[in-house]
Length: 548
Image: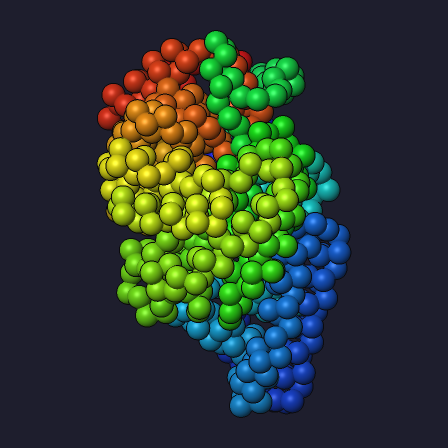
């Protein structure tokens, strides 16, 4: 079987499938509406209790995810809607489903970030219905031994409890290279294959060998094949321990290796990583799920914590990237027909200039007494004038380094002009791919177009990197492309000077750099650019690499 490889290495084990959601039974007559309503409330209470217990076991970021899920299930409006339907004669399972589906429709109508939360409601609905019917609650299996987890997709309540000591590898039917599951697999450092439609036919207990690098799943592998893969994995891990410190090519060319940071619970792990700083500090976590923007003092406190954790190291702060999949009532319009092409990123500053001014003031205040090297960049820059105005506002607050995200093809094509007013660039490969190929980055069926190995996408990166070099500006990549060791070599060959990824991805990237010269990286980049498609580019480069 083949899908999209998104994790690292290989692993073998028996399949254990996610427990499926319970099917709704045929509607039935309700003899005692009050008892039906009471049973609904009891089922929702059981879900809240179960999620609370899971949160206590998970700890850390998993606990936060599960606690948020429990709060959604405990919403009294939800229980009241379902109970009212039961009192009108609808049986419990269908009353619950209808109440959840009503909430779901409201989130979908809100669009963007809120629409993404609809999947959370689907998971809660299935759990509540299972409780009411006395069926197994859908979720992670527990076969009593390590396993390869196979699922249609993964819900937040499940991913929060994944234990890499028990889950040997991940395989999902849906999902693409930028999906939640893909990002999770890289963070955990486990092999994973997403977007594998044939995985729907895998049965519990069947042994498989999952190759996260090339997206292959071997069925009923011979013991010799498993041993060879295990041996390769052991040797790979042993080799990685020999590479530490700043990123360098084999001939000493520096390539800064940085981490991505997007939530408070990630801070400790990111700061402890063998990295030279933060290549992408996403500040949206301060703004989401609230009716009003956070105050200057609240923002400064949060930024100060990050700068303190990375004292003496680089921290690249991305200003608020609202809009599209992250709508905010105080920053974006709810009635945009196509928010991905609307008022998002830096464009929100035109709607409310004070929003950006307050954020820049907070960043400056937090940086004032810090030894961190604070760089500030704007998302969704399209034309030189936007870059110039943003840079002027950054410097007016006493912040010395202002940069632009290269996420729009227009910015890559005019990077020479942007470089005249910006101090650095950072390429967001996920959005750049979306806009280059006119393909929704959340749509799994278009995953091949969104593949960061696409030669057209790499050509835009090369164009921006060339302009950056001509003006002596550093240029980094902070999208998921930077986590692929082979693609990292290509990016460096194109002229990229820093790479930012999940901490678990950096050892592989560091080792790949250390075993290839800059000239070899340029040769690999040329191979990728000359390919006709992403698959060919990936194959040519990987077959020409030197194994670390």
